[in-house]
Amino acid sequence: MKNFRIFLGYFCLVLIAISMLYPFFAMVNLSFVNNNEIFLNAGKVFHTNLTLDNYKNVFTSIPLSTYFLNSLVVAVITTIGQVLFAAMAGYAFARMKFKYRDLLFLVILITMLVPPQVNIIPLFFFFLELHWINTYQALIVPALFGGFGVFLMRQYFLGLPKDLEESAKIDGCNLFQTFFKIALPLALPTVATLAIFTFVSSWNSFMWPLIVTNTESMRTLPVGLAIFKGSFREITLWGELLACSVICTIPVIGVFLAGKKYFISDILQGGVKE
Image (tube, rainbow, N blue to C red; front, side, top):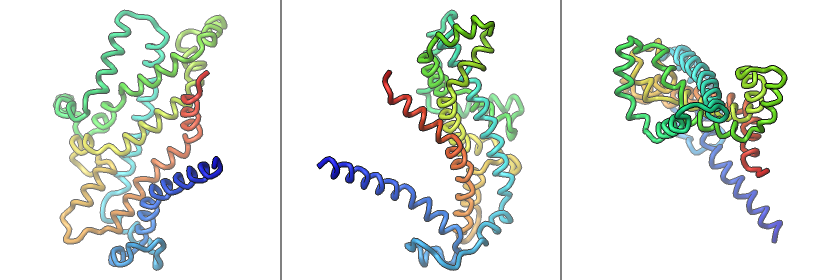
């Protein structure tokens, strides 16, 4: 009976995995199929007569390399900035004692309950006054700070043994040396988790880049993909659209694979009670 339950569990997991992977596999497979043949044999698992024309055409139809570079620059800088600021703020809230510390942390938590759409109009007029519209600053600065990252890092640092930091102080380390040489390296799994979430969120961001960019030279991939889909065409070029979608997913998959070990490690740490 026990073996049957194990088999049933693995069988269900395999079915779930297939249901999640098949749409991605179909997207990649159909991106190599000619536009005229996509709907003729859409139910096929494997297609013949594969071609690279969709990938060649998409780079000539739209400035895809510009969109890709903009998204990469914004996502990388946003990820590095948010991880650094969140780690420093989380460590301060966990270890330092200052006036109104708990009240300030409560305010940060409250910001997590506010829908991002509420802040769009005030932020837009604020950046308009700064003359930052259609610049990298407008795309990056609002995403550098987030309540979730501060909360996540604070919770980790609260569980970090104080003995390590006290030993570092005895050895002559100041606050910044203790943070960068002791606390931050130990928080690497949590840092990797936050970095993955931040990169994916920034890479997939659509509404804010759509509002603050008005030229092709500053548009990001999600915005460029939406404009390509909704451009004035008699027919939708589904093959090229699928090719764009495949290109969009490559960096996200790469980042997750690079941080997978630390991400899983952080999940396991959270599931173990000491």
